[in-house]
Length: 277
Image 1 (cartoon, one colour):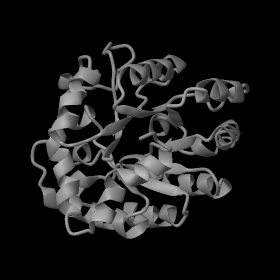
Image 2 (spheres, rainbow, N blue to C red):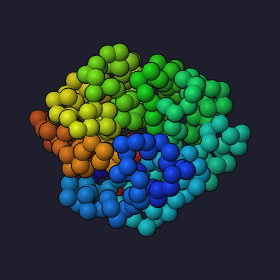
Image 3 (cartoon, rainbow, N blue to C red):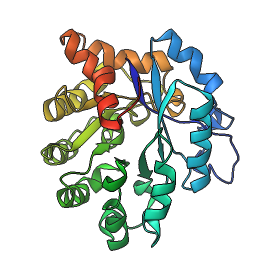
Image 4 (cartoon, one colour):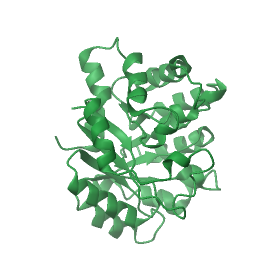
């Protein structure tokens, strides 16, 4: 089963999607399952993980409704206020839904670079395992050392790094990102999504070779058992088509064995998120 481990949906309004700045006008419309389904079919993708784009409980409920209506949505990574004193009740309520598989917070928008280590947030992360939930790390490279601190506290909690931590691909400067990725990858409970790369490159002038140094680092660090592919659709369309994004990964890993490719293209996401067939 081929899985797109990272995509979004939204009904656009300027209040809730203020991050769509100048140059992102093409994103300022609704993006719904009916828009994505033909793209999945064209690329032979069997299912997806829908990831939150708003930090509200309503976002989680809405994504679960979409998952109920669209069988190709195999799992949802929603938002829950992990700093809330009654976070366990919120997690328990969402975890009743079989497709609610994990939680994400948009950490890289927090003014505090050490947000991940705030006591209330750490306590919230500590509640996830009892409900069988994963956590998606959405970071900038400067947050990677703090992420190591967090992960060290929870050796049994499954974490996955979104968008390879958004390195400055446009600048062709893998360091110090690469060194920090190596440190994070030493924790065996951390996986990595090969996603979000094209929007960190030159949107109009990127070449496949631009991604090679970064793909080599994550392959070296996470291997074939802890990598998964995500499109970051529709955000990726700022710089490339859905198919072009998938082809970057397909061509880079074309020399792997059938079983290794199957793991990266779906098996790892399926086991990490415990997705249904």
